[in-house]
Image (cartoon, rainbow, N blue to C red; front, side):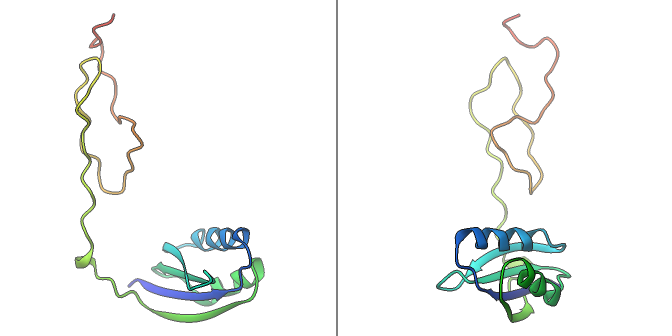
Length: 125
């Protein structure tokens, strides 16, 4: 069961915000971290099996005064999630390489082709 934790932390500068985000993201079981509130002083954590009391005390030690505001079940259901965007294959290819295969969900495509190079298929040599 995923839970949503909201912690109010006194963060005066962007360095404190990034430090808090890094600390929370490094905690085991955390799925997502976000800043909320008008002054961006609330850290919203969604995860499974996250200890809210230990997380709050760690933020107090490393960042500054922290107050646990809310602990509850995450309202988003698995059925309401939108499907991940499909991998789109570019229309151009060099040296007669076949297009790459579809990647499983969760892989990121940074413009690299994830395949091995076939032997002796380049027309230049």
